[in-house]
Image (cartoon, rainbow, N blue to C red):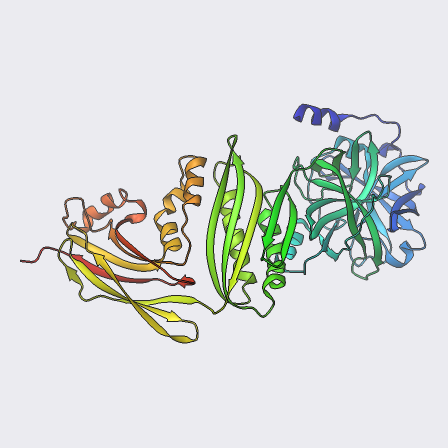
Amino acid sequence: MFYLLFLMLTASGDNRFFPVDSVKPGLEGYGLTSFYGTRIDTFTVEVIDVLHGVNPGHTIVLAKLDGEIIKHTGVLAGMSGSPVYIKGKLLGAVAYSWTFSKEPICGITPAEEMQNMISTFGSVKGIAPLRSLLAVSGIGINPYVDSIATMFNLEVVPAGRDTGKGSLVPGAPVGIVFVDGDAVIAVMGTLTYTEGKRIFSFGHSALLSGGVELPFATGKVTGLLPSIYSSFKFISPLNVIGTTVWDGGTGVIAEIGKKPQWIEFTIDGGFKRFHYRLANYPTIIPYLTSSLTFSAIPEILGADFEGTVKADLSISMEFGGREEVLKRTYYLAGKGLHRDMTFFASGILRDILNNPYGGLKIRSINLKLTPGKGVNIFTVKDIILPSEEYSPDEKFRVKVVLGRYRKPDTTITMVLRSPSIEGEYYVDCLNSADLYRTMKAESFENPENIREYIHVLKGFPPNNILSLVVVSSAQTVSKSGIVLPPSKRVALSSLIENGTRLEEKIERILNGEIRGIAKKKIVVKRRK
């Protein structure tokens, strides 16, 4: 694949291109772009001069644009990739501009460099790529959409849910699709030229993504917004027609007919269900799911929902030629749960995608919500022990004080057994999910292999289980039961994961979200 890509990127010498060496100030030509629908419009171009070496090996042609629309808007965001012709030959693509410019001055990426696809990124002081458009439809603007826009220097604009085939001619709107289905998120620009099944567009890097394969679609312009700061087009994606094969410093290459890899994402609230397809781009998958979850939850539960929700998350993934399904149940209670629900889902996805071994592909994500009445929050406030000192293997009652939401505190009694070895211990009370993460921290940070990492992720219990445990401190307890002096505590601490070892555990299932932790120290020794 990389050999074919190399051949594709290094093809040169096409006499369709106007050579940069022949560019002189005052040369006139024309450009193509779409100002409305899929219609291709023309604007005039006058060369100002050539800037050589603005980035390593990269040249920019300065030019002034003109035309009935350009006079009112200046250079628009969304024109990235608009082809410019001199004497009937393709000079390059509109790719750069300046904010607050009094005249429609732009920077043009030479077509010769787009063909060779120089891998330079970023900008130099005073000149920056035209901001590509992040077209958003079906969700409200939220912090996660803003994070995607900031990450890639994109201009967020509303998009419509349009249909139609669009066109694949120079000047036509095209883009990279992040989300399809009940919502749309796409990065939109303009097609520069085609070569067989290959599409060259944007004239600059869209995402700094290199060889990432992402869905590529036609588009439609629905309007223009003139602005003193920076004018832009409203562009909506239409049909996915291929996949990107390269996103370099001088443009984006896509291949027509190449099927993209999608991740199916469903949010099921029972009476209301949303289905999306996500681009398989690990860098932004947590941001995409967060954007969609943040917007969908109020639609499912209602903006003023106050109660308890059971969230069942199922993630199908593939690694090492086999498929695994991770299932996680979590309870959330309170008012306006869209933010907490978003943190829950995106946090698990980050755990999966940030594994130290890589090579793991997510195939589908399903989030099922079961709402219930009443805000069932149980906050662990205190544990009351009958004594601080116990004999080995002695049973004792522990009173757990739980704070309730708009209700009096509740006290429940649970029976523990002290360890059989003398020493100092701690009695901890918390939800089972938090306990599991604490006890398995070493496996998260330093797993032996990807299978161990996934096994740990799959082992998480739900957070509605109250765990009362006795843990030993590696600083004080040895296998012989002797309390060690400080000089020897460090040597033992490395023998027990996280410095603690679970000695005793009992559980109680509650009908809601458990928060907080309480801890008390006890001493186990034989009574004389």
